[in-house]
Length: 630
Image (cartoon, rainbow, N blue to C red):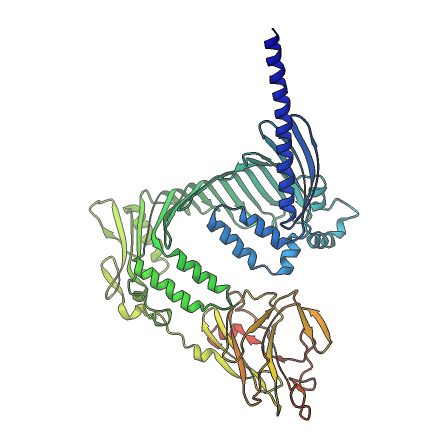
């Protein structure tokens, strides 16, 4: 009996001691995690109560330094491609935007940890938006402050944005309903998942008004997303049971939409395939499309070269054109082929039935000797194989020919071995493009239209001062090269430079490259940076992008200094590019001569830049130059 009693005592002592040991280990892990967060851009406040079998805690986490927080969070992402993509997108944000979105963002939390099993029950609540966002929204909705709750305050104060997480990374977001006054109703239900799966029961967004002019809604039911990634292979699947969109004029419905993608990557290339299918799609009252699928396959796409090319778009020191040529060269050397096939049945368009049978196949192969981008003159320089084949039932072919003939379009099919199937086939051959075995485009007609960019260039004086000038040239459809020059009007010079500012741009993301043989370096100052104003005798905070070339060893006053900028104008073609231009020089070696100059000076220009210096206006009419000078 004594032995049994002693054994029980030992077991109890062991359990109690184990509980204290586990409790100590849990406390140690919590303290370590708080220290880790505090050293990576957060401020964490924590209170906890450690009992024998469980540890309870609660507190607050606030974002203080957005850059440090982003770097910390990105470091936790295992998927290297996703991590790189997010880092790149975040880097494109200027400092002011990062602070506006994230600084002051605050979460409250509470948790329970089982000291024996390490089972976790963690709840996280968004309780405060960033400081500036909160201010801006408060100003926007101040009209409603005395009559109703401001929509975002209700969400935050009542902790409706609530995420529950367990020790395995399984999560669930509480159902959310809210209204933005005079805008829309929002509903999100049954959102849960883990690191490789997410399910969403319902997303519904609808206008608050229901009149004939503004009513609209988007409803998505039962979304299931799966994502798997390892070192070389990635796969993703998205299934949507029902999607409906409608506004005052149009409507669209689709049932059982499925998207399935797989990719395999080696050190240089990526290969894969994607499949899209749906059971039924309804477009307004005009068309019902049933049982449709499409597959796309690709092999040995030089993904690394593609990334290098895209990275060059965001770099000021990399030649995009060179990277583009290297990407094309890799494409051709790999013998790239892209193929696609699909099928559909039972389309009803304007109450006319189409496609008892519809199948297509398409193949594109890149030319193995593709030239440099400057030397591409024809479609044949890019593609070695282009082939497109469509098979459909005879009745659908007849209906289609009849419909197209009403539009004065010539469209024919050829017979196949199956009497009920007609075929349309288009193919690139050495001497042109053939449709159904008949040449429709000669080899010369495949040549790309040459663009005489010299016609779309300008070289001359900008503004009131002739010492500082600008010229521009349209390098391609989306890239404008602007060159700035400055010639001092001084007998002795020791330093000088050119400053260019862009009131429309906050950062340098539109500047794809700079070129100079005159300056040792070109400096960039984005919105929010401190820049010195000699006119004011103090630093000022930049409101927009300024780029400066400066030489501290400029000794020949007869020398003209210059630099050029390659500017992406993709989404600016319908407007003017606003440019402030000025030059300046110093003489710090000969006190008997003129000490300094501004070009233009205060008598030549009444327009000032953000540093209060007089400037020449060097604005460029992008609409005219991108439309052939018209």
